[in-house]
Length: 271
Image (cartoon, rainbow, N blue to C red):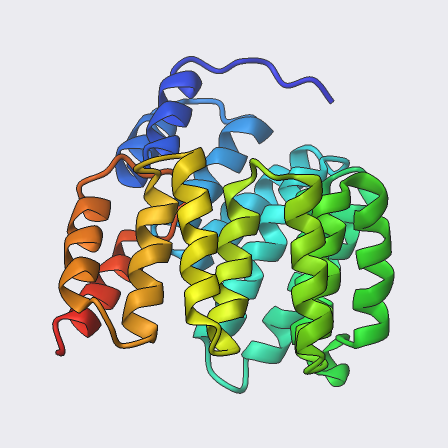
């Protein structure tokens, strides 16, 4: 479905990408006739602001207007997933079930939606069997991801191997992911995290250093380097400076949240 461009939508989307969720919402709320595109962005803003119930409510309205849109289903899955993580033991299973259903629907509507494939993979990987999770299901999605993007496929296989405690295999897959996409800093950060978990600190530092050469002062690298220092209990003064620099950077919704950075900064300060 082709969506008409609503007045103010471009500015609201610009603010969303700057993580200025409340300001984006104010513009969107003033649009008198809200189409599916407007409601989708509202849902993303509510999600970014941590208001997951409101996110599901507006995204359900978006889906009612455009039932064939994979991205709407994907974001509904994400919002219900966060509701599951933040709700009581009584309500969490129902929210988790809806998350799975919407991730599955997003993939069904558009099998080429790599973000939807990735989120469904992570759901299957992490959720217990009674909530529809399972390693075999995750492996099947990983295979589909490999057909869409080799690097993402290797990443998924690494996550699956790590979950099975096959750490050598996980490392090998991540190195393959880096090899086929050498300029993707996310893969180098993933590799650094895995190496650090195995106690290979020097190699983890080297992986972060390679990412820094590709994208100096990239906020995600600042955060990853600080997190590596904090988790390995070293260079804490440097970690604090990195996090302060991160918090003063222009962030996107794909970067770790400011709340996460502030929490990590407190750990670096020993509080």
